[in-house]
Image 1 (cartoon, rainbow, N blue to C red):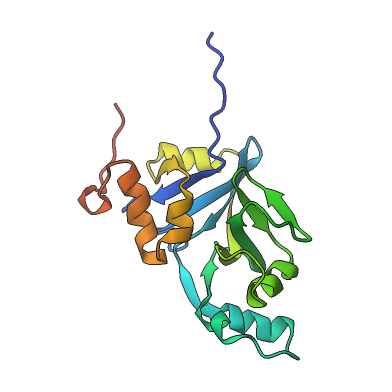
Image 2: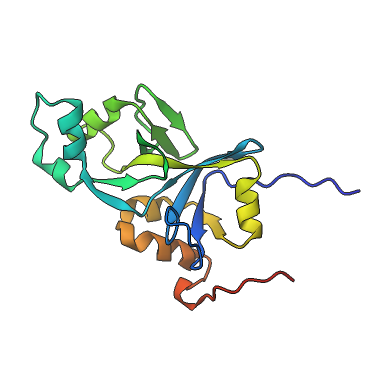
Length: 189
């Protein structure tokens, strides 16, 4: 009997297939923060919402008016789980009260990173989300078997240098795929 080693998707992008009907994930690009035998966690990176960093700062430190540039820093819908919890992806470098190095990119979850970005000394390249995407053990693997996702290698340029609406197609293009040309019919050989 052959031993099969689990293949995990940490530090990769998930590309939602065009036939994805779950409104939480239809037409999304998700960065996988963690994936192991217990499940997976990711952040949707191409769904800005109507909130800006200025809106968040008005709640976190109402005594200070937010800098004008914060009006132009979008807050993304990171996923349907804990939508009141913030996550910031940024290049590895500065450490904040709650920062995890993911290998070339870091995830910070403490308020001090938001204040540092607002005050002009935080990471210039950042992506802020509220909420995250979570999968129980085996759930993501089952969704792959059902052809709900494609995956591709992480590319920081897609995350930090492209506008939100360009990210999904750019990730698919890394695979040589045009999502507009894919059919909703799936099969297995």
